[in-house]
Image (cartoon, rainbow, N blue to C red; front, top):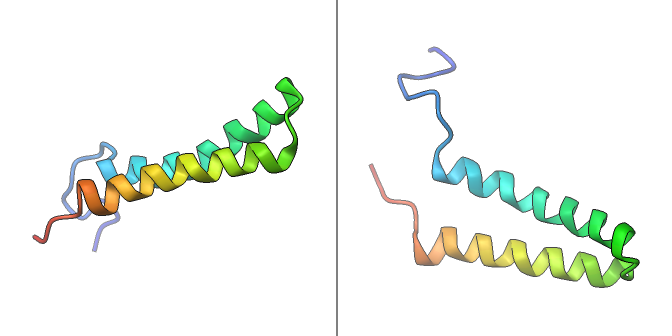
Amino acid sequence: MSADSGRGSGLTRYDLVLLCIPVTFLVAAVASLVLEVPAHTATAAGGLASAFVLADALFRNPPLGT
């Protein structure tokens, strides 16, 4: 079985969702340093943004069966 398994080489929507979750926390951490926002506030904002991304992927545009 090949690693590509016959699919296109581009990223799918769900790959982007999985990429967005840690990126929101990374952006929150950088914003905490640059804007001198408390770390717990920036982390909460990153968590909220990640929750919106996850809720969109699970409930608004759920995965479809093949």
